[in-house]
Image 1 (tube, one colour):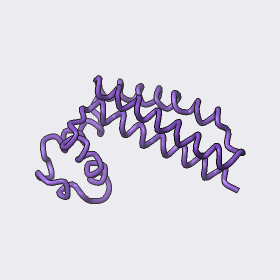
Image 2: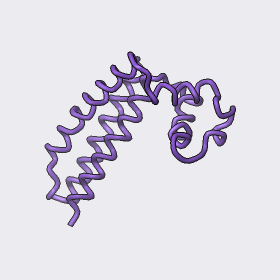
Image 3: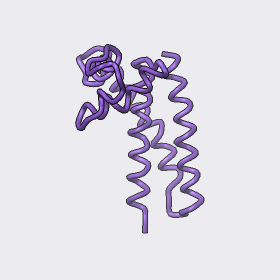
Image 4: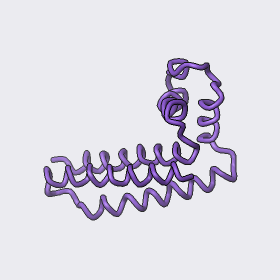
Length: 126
């Protein structure tokens, strides 16, 4: 759980850094909107985490497949399309850095936040 909170703190800082970097390059960007999007997205991620803890969830299965070497012991055993790609992305974090399920949820929440940021930037581009 502590590892997950640490990932949230680090990725929050990275998100703010990305937002501030693009704000200086394009004054059309609504900095407050993007900054407010971070806690909103974090709240939704936490709501999904609570759901996933008490109900069957794909995220639990992805984590367990990596943890128990479902596709094999090597990283490239997980490479593929569809859900295997999600497992492939998660493999180094679980196997090499020892991420817990909560830390993986926080990391993939950050990936989703990056998607929101870059989608907004794409739409605001001239």
